Amino acid sequence: MANDETTVLRIDVASAIPVYRQIVDGLRALLVHGAFKPGDRLPTVRQMAVDLAVNHNTVAESYRLLAQEGWLELRRHHGATVLARKPLHAQPERHDDFAQRLRELAAQAISDGLDTGAVAKQLSCLASDLKRNAPL
Amino acid sequence: MANDETTVLRIDVASAIPVYRQIVDGLRALLVHGAFKPGDRLPTVRQMAVDLAVNHNTVAESYRLLAQEGWLELRRHHGATVLARKPLHAQPERHDDFAQRLRELAAQAISDGLDTGAVAKQLSCLASDLKRNAPL
Image (cartoon, rainbow over all chains, first blue to last red; front, side, top):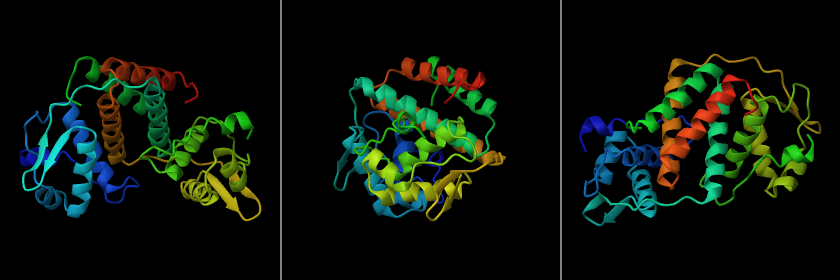
């Protein structure tokens, strides 16, 4: 992974979202949109920890969670390799869960002072991007 | 708050999202869309804890966080009262933060097996709801 891609991961240590979760969410988005291909090696835990200026246990935990999701293979001394992951089929309740979290995320943004119209616009933009298969 | 509204809060104890955070996010969504008006009393911590079958410290923490955000006034023996909250003006970086979390939430749903088209549709639906000011 080139350094400019590493920097796509924005970590906010002041956020209420734990750092390991921010790393998981950010890397997963890169994996879903194909920024890494099966067989690619991720930076070592140590390197990623240095790049993001976080504890290496935090990065290790993030890699473990992505391995549990089937995105990575972890081998001692070999680091993390991206797997060819079979698409899953979501349970119906997963749709409701996504809809709920989406509403809550929008509500939080509005509560934080974003204009409702601006939030709606972001949602529409992402919907368009997904429809034309643009990188997330 | 009527009991049927209490049940709008869906708590998933198996989720990676801490329960106090789920309560905060769920209640905030109800507050943003106006399900509670300034002056309304929320159920007591004890009552909410019973309704949701969670520890009362968890509910107390959620109420504290919403009070910090300016949504609630907490008074000993008087419970939580909804405040008339002045709209905030978000910093520009808050827009980027929302856009990033939105992409990550969509990526997670797709990673969990939701169809990209279904995710796009949910995004469009919520955008339309916001534009016509429908309840979140």
